[in-house]
Image: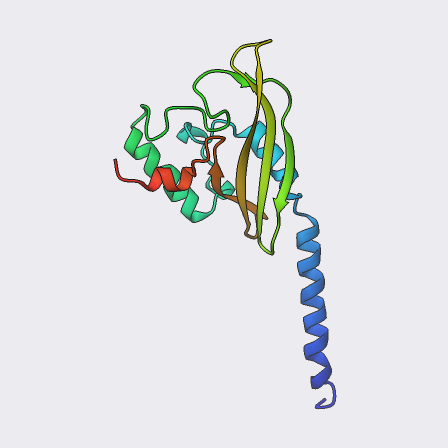
Length: 161
């Protein structure tokens, strides 16, 4: 038995690495996660009834909850749609998602789209940045949202009224 003990640690380590690799393989890419989030949770910043804390890091979740408590159903710190950077207008085409940075455990995904104030009107290219953190078991979680105006929702929501 004592001869096997030195071999058990390396085998256990290999097994754990294999399991970790399999878990990561089940995670969507940061771009896929962001696309799904934008499509299914576009109202995340204003709709506490649909809030799913598993989508956010604890820090961003606390910032959202603080904003809702501050706003009390009215306009809070932000008086425009953070996806658009404006009160009016719309995306003139489907957004494109690109991971600009993906160091270990973090990803910065840019969502780029043409913005138009009115249909058929002039278009301006805009970019939203979503900062994601990898946190098991949900894989990715939103840690911050940078509007086309360059405002960090996490920082903005943390400011005193």
